[in-house]
Length: 151
Image: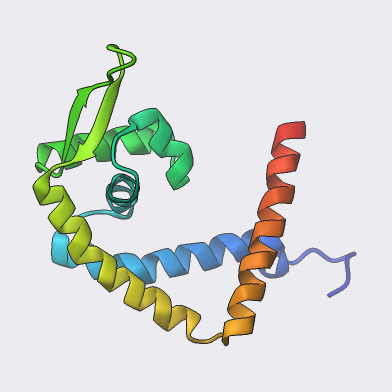
């Protein structure tokens, strides 16, 4: 591709966004219909399943979501009985979110499903290619974060 002619389909940020969207959709199909939770709700559930006792403000950057998405997901997950709030021992104004037993059970049901789908997707790569992909993604992520910090 010539650098003089711009093609959206070959523009790296677009390719990455399109790939992320397709992969996310392929995985979310597993739990959306079966468990009636959205991609955003799954990310919040997964964040709390991985790191119990997080403040909502910490979930957003950890799960690559914005504050409003987290707020809506937390409200629905709480309404459904999958998460609960408790006072933060160090800051009474803050609330810590945790999975309820029902939330933990849901998390444990979904994890094997999404891991199997991830394994299928990455099955197109051999072990060396998987390691290379991870290294490449980490390098690009570090550069992107550097650009964000510089403004």
